[in-house]
Length: 205
Image (cartoon, rainbow, N blue to C red; front, side, top):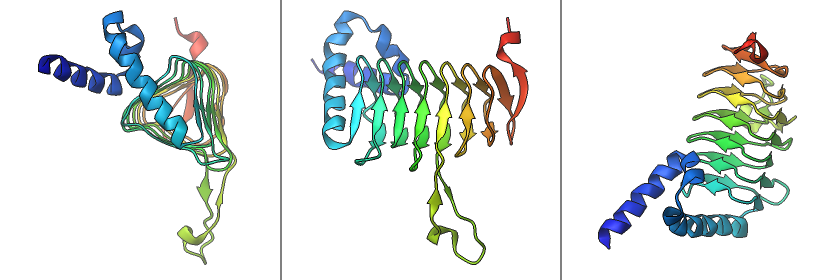
């Protein structure tokens, strides 16, 4: 019995950091994994203004906060890995992946993420900015928020950053460590700080 408990605890830890594995679990594992997920998601939806679609995975170590008016909407078959921080308003389509250590804050403008977009680990997406008038300390200045829109089938590489007001077109690729300060066209591949277009996904075979 203790071996079974230890195995399940370790498997839950593995799933929390590699949540894509949840979608290929065998029935003998789903018999405990599915109720475990249902309990985690029910608790989140009871405590925060969060809605979660069918067959999604939320790691117990993920931190989701959504006050009234700053909802988090998660589509079907999404996954949110451990050590991620999400603060609404955020709206995800279906099959969106947020890997471990990501930080997303919708400010007042909202973060919108399209279907099948994949966000690698330690990505930062902030849909707000502080005022910077020199005569007033930054922490005392009002924040402004335009919102961020990320299209469908976008791949955002590890440790990338996306600033407020940016729109990323469908099927774009954001390189590892890129800092995106301007709109990205559909299918564009961008990299660097600040991010610049270095290619087009349609040119790749």
